[in-house]
Length: 112
Image (tube, helix red, strand yellow):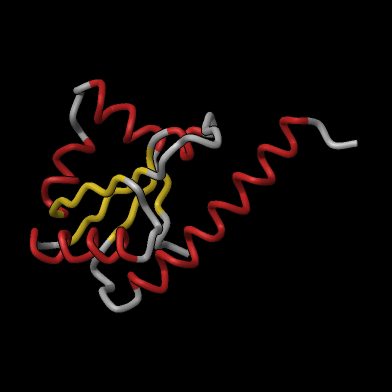
């Protein structure tokens, strides 16, 4: 009989797979974009009430906002932050606790 931990990991894996498929379908039209998952689902401490937190990253702000809107419209994310690639690269080296935690836990969903 599988353990609770094994069942949770299987469900998380299945949920990540669905997210990746949906994100890749959207991101295929814009190859310079990136989509990252962060928060409880990325960390693995999610529950039935957890939302899906995403970062929509593109070279320019309008592209990032359009990607964020598409992710929301496709119901792939509940909370989607749009930002430029330059800003994301700045935040990757930030020592602010919020961004440091995101940097450590984030999972890129659009990459193979």
